[in-house]
Image (cartoon, rainbow, N blue to C red; front, side, top):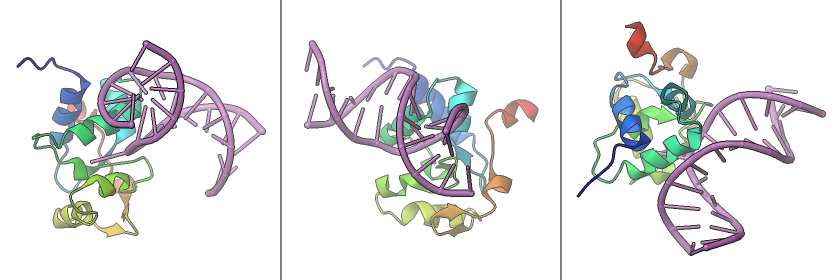
Length: 110
DNA sequence: TGTTTGACCACGG
DNA sequence: GCCGTGGCCAAAC
């Protein structure tokens, strides 16, 4: 088995670095990794369920909406997990998303 | 092997 | 501020 390091791994790594109670967007990851397309991030997270311990529930679209909730084992699991971390979800959207928004580049800042 | 879709985003009107 | 279109790369059909 030879799994070549692709942007997938990068997305997984960044997603794992997302602080608890904080959320990020596909575009932020894509921009930080310079993938060229935020779509790849979505695909990567979709594949992330292949045995990767990646908190994909912390990744939302730029609207702060839980767009990928339907891809979870249960459509409510994503919201439950976020609320479990202290993130309030209203109408499938992250409350104070702008305030809870975390950028991968913040790692360099810290 | 070519076409279509996909957990999206940025830009223009 | 909302709607339509383009772009991006990869996987599914």
